[in-house]
Image (tube, rainbow, N blue to C red):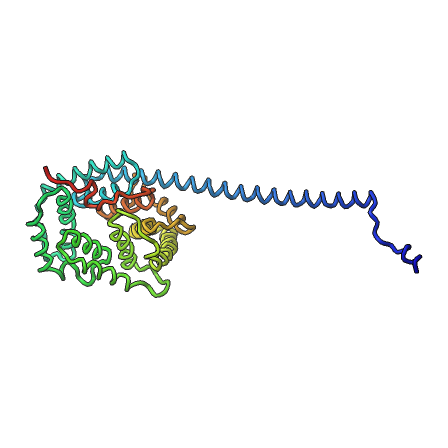
Amino acid sequence: MRQDMFNSSYPVSTPDTIDHMTNGMKKKTIRLYSILSISICAIMTISLYQYTNNQLLQSQKHSASERGVEWLMSHKDDMRTGHALWFFMNLYQVTPDKERQKQYESVIREKEIQYERIDRSEIDAHETQYALMSILPQALVLLWKQCLGEDVGMEKEHIRTFISNNRTALFPYHLDMGNKIVGAYVLSELGVLDKIFYDATIQEIISYAPKAQADINFPYLYGLTHIALTKSDYYSFYLNPFEFEKEIVLLRQAVTQLLLAIRNEKSHQNKRTGRLIDISSEVLIALKLLRQKSNIDSEALIKEILSLQNSDGSWSGEDIYLTSHHTLVATLALMDFAQQFPEAKIYCPFGIKQKE
């Protein structure tokens, strides 16, 4: 029995077996090292590709927004004075570029002086669809003048009386939600309309939120984007995303829907993309105000907006106002906003002053 034990074939470590094991371990190590190296190279290549693409997109956005600004600057005298004043106040609020800010300030001051020559009694109550749009530029200038310390009490009373006598004409049931909330915001800021009406308008818009993902609801989206704009006092500060979680989800869904809609229009060679550019840009602006990072769909939507810019820097509309508005919002959607806004009301961009 002892003999059987000694004759049993137990593995014995010899120099040859040790070398064989060592070589096997070396091969496995080399193989693992090769796999790891290939993986690291692949990751670095993908990261470099993504970084290069991001840098390229950033460069394209900057170039396109600069051309948009140049178009707006060169057509400022073609716009109605009130529109130009409002557009350049928007640009003044968001730009981090101090030199650009000086240019916008120059235009704002120039247009404010020109507005002095306009007869502010031009409010035609019979043109119901234009009544609110006639009052808003005037209300904006009155807000501006209040910031300069001027007494505008008589003019405010004139507008307050007009609103009281023509509430239905100013805010008809079919009025676009975006215009309704802007009107409620500006007039309540001026103090000629109760802020309760502004708050009620917000609740009305929220109540129209789609229950499920459906076709693009333009009136609701315009209302939603203008909630973000007015709640931020038009770029006075960024919004707290935790207060708008449901709205952010709907805005994200809208990005995907708008991307598909623009691609569909382009595939059918349909030139009526102005409205899609306009609302797409406003949705992207609202997401920026809510401090939301870009995702694949929003970057794709940005690329579509870039592809639709005209050679002169504009985004086309049916008339000078629509072209100017499409160009403004597309430019704002592409711009890098300042890390911190001026914390000043849009209608009081240079701060409250006392008239000398």
